[in-house]
Every structure is written in structure tokens, then in C-alpha cells.
Length: 440
Image (cartoon, rainbow, N blue to C red; front, top):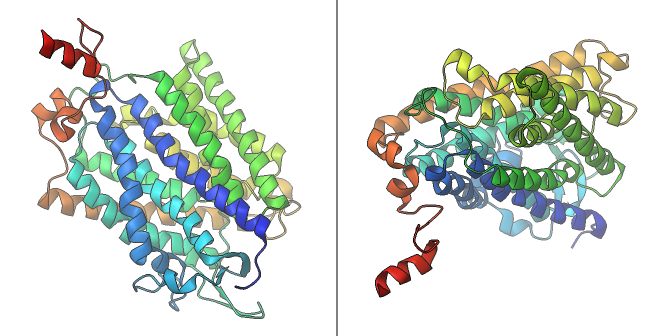
């Protein structure tokens, strides 16, 4: 087997596990935010993405995203050849000192969580079978191509002097270290499209739809924060100083965004909330994702504060424009992703990463900001339009939305024949309640 650096391989393997943990963390985060009658469905939407996307990734997803087809838009449309690459090193703009299967596994986890993020915008009202079909189609025609645009830096020759086949945005020079465009703007734009297609929940703006469990939300946010160190620092694909920079910036920006959100809540509403703290942390994680290896820790403080404040206001857009983004995916992931991607044009510092360009605050001109805007809004437009088409086709065939009576009763019981909490007032609930009833 060609020479690898065991430390780098170990770090990327650990990071892969951390990124996988983010999807169950998202399930807790979203599960706590919905009403008690929708918890199972909400969590299952995230968990099912793991199964669907993993199989498709091995079948053809990796090939579409990370092979040189001679096109800057998409990789080879062919069955996976991962099995024949067990003894090869990864090659993505350079020969990397990690096995290709390790690189592929790491990138798989990004593909898994991206469609899961979309589910928060369509909570309480989506047919589960339609969701499964949507995920399979969406990752195929939206995520895999966008991943090729953003994350594929081309095939390097043996001597490293020639690179061919880089994705469109990567070749253009758009800076996105860990997925502000490919993951968060991509998912956020799709979430907006699906929310518009499905329409508002029964009782939207008329009935209270508060989170049923803030502790679950906080647990989910904690798991996301923990896993995000693999998401960002792991994207260095090496245990080096760049990984350290991404790690520190992830912590700094997230903490600052949490504070920024709570400040807005305190000034606007007169109180700070647990939901606000969790949402602010996620907004900071989203915003620093594209910028984590291109800015200084000081720059990360400002990015986090700005993202926390802007996203705290952005979640109210659904009320102003009267669309039902159930769990604020648009306000946090789309808006946060745009803030983070564009912020590189201001805070980018070549001193911390020689591959990047200087932003406006570090002596640069408008070049970098224009590149970042191109990447952000190209992905936004592509994802939004394609998602509208996919969603409409599914709606015309399988139907997207459960009927009104099923929604009012609760999607957990009508779609899955389960409820999250089985309580019996006589015994305290659960299986023991059932047993006691039979004995009686």
C-alpha cells in the first residue's frame, strides 16, 4: 500500500465519526423543537437520511462528486469503483496522505446531514414515503453535483504539476473550507422551496407551536457543537496547524454567536431563552463553516456576533412573508450560510492561509467578495429551482402532504403508529401501564 501518515489518517477517521454523530444530534435538536405528537417523525426523517444516502454514495454518489469526468459540473456517472481503490491514496487537487476510502467516508457524512437539515422546514406535515423518495432524488441531482462544484479540486498528476477536472466553483477560486455553500446554503434554499410547496401547517400563527422539550434541543445542540469540530477541523484532511486554526475558530465563532443571539433576545424581548442559546450556537457553527480556515480567531469573534444577531432577526422572516419554515432552517442555515460565505470577503486573511486571498478588512480588494457572492447565490438559485421541480413532481405522483385530519391527530401516530411518550395517568405509563391494564 502507498505510504500514508498514520496521524492524518487517524484524525480524519475520528473526524468522520464526529460528523456522523451530528445527524443523530440534529435529530435530537429538531425532535425537541416540534410538538410532542411529531417527535418520532421528526427524528426518523434525520435518521433515515443516513440509510438512504450511504447506499447511494457507495452506488454512485462518490463517483459523481469526486471523479474527473472532464467536466466542471459533474463527475463520472458510473457505478462506484471504491472497492478497487482500497490500496490507493486520496487525490483531490493534490495527492493526499490518507487512503481514498477514508476520504470518501469523511465526505459521505457531509452528504448524509445535508438533506437531513431540510427536514426541519417541513415538520409535522410530510408523508414519510415522499420524504424518502425526495432524499434519494435530491442528493442525486442537487447535492452530488454541488459537492463536485465546491469540494472537488481536480485530479493531480503523479508529479503534482498538472491538475485536471476541478469543479466549477473550486476552480473559480471560491473559498469554502467545510461547506457553507454545498451544505448550508444548499439545504437552506431547498428548505425554503419545500416550505413554499407544502404550505403552512394547520393552525400556523393561530395555535401555539412551541418546542415540546427544550432539554432535547439543548442536548442536540451540544452534540452538533461537539461533532462540528470534525466537520470543520477534519476538513484540513491532516492533523496540522490548519486543523488547529479551524478548530479554534469553530469554538470562538460559535460562542460569540450564542452571545449575539441572546443579546438580541434580551434587548428585543426582555429575556434570554434556552432555545435562543441553542439556535445561536448553531447559527455560529453554520457561519464559521466556510470561513474557519481562512480567518483569524479575532475575525471569528466578529463573524459569530454578526451571524448570531442577524439570524436571531432572520427567523422572524417567516411571519413577515407568511411562509411556514417550521424549525427555522431558512433563518439559520440559509441566512447563516450566506453570512459566513460572504464574511470571507471581509475577514479573509492570507496570513493564516496562504491559499486564500485577503478580504477587504485585511488589505484586499473586491475580488474575493465577488467570488464569494458568486458561489453563494449560484448554489442558492440552483438548489431552490431544482428542489421546486423535484418537490412538485413528487407532489403530483405520491403527494407530499398528509391529510388535514392526520396532521391534527399527529403525524407520529398516523404515519408510524408510534408515539414518543406513552403515559398512563394511573400507573405512570409505558409497558408497565399496559401490563397493569391486562392484569386488571
